[in-house]
Length: 148
Image 1 (cartoon, rainbow, N blue to C red):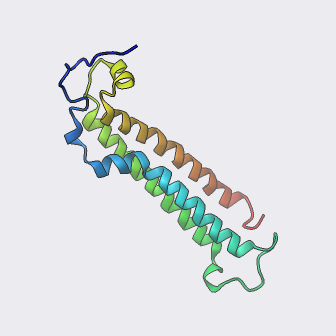
Image 2: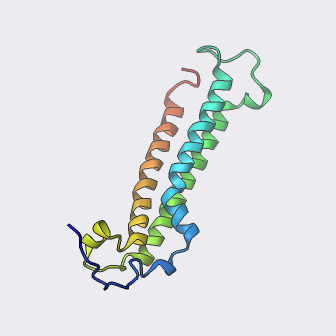
């Protein structure tokens, strides 16, 4: 079933788009997932360099890897900070654009009205989710042995 726009045939489906910058919209919706991916890759690189080829630390790890736990901690904290900043940005974006199509939620689904607001809400949800994913890894850093 196809719905017509509540704004008319020639209306902009995202009338508050000018209130939110493209960079803010992209960062708010994809900053946390990208931070999580970079965190995962960096943590894997650090941990595998220190722990390979077994369950025990190398006898002579690379000089930059002597403080692997501190490096992993810093990576986790940076990724969580980026996820929080992305959530704040997405929330700010939503505050600026949530009135795009008042009282017409069907339009967001069927014909794309309110897409700036939708992307902002999506950014809030994904930022919280990926923050929690990094937070679980952060907790694991304290609970699980480095090469265990």
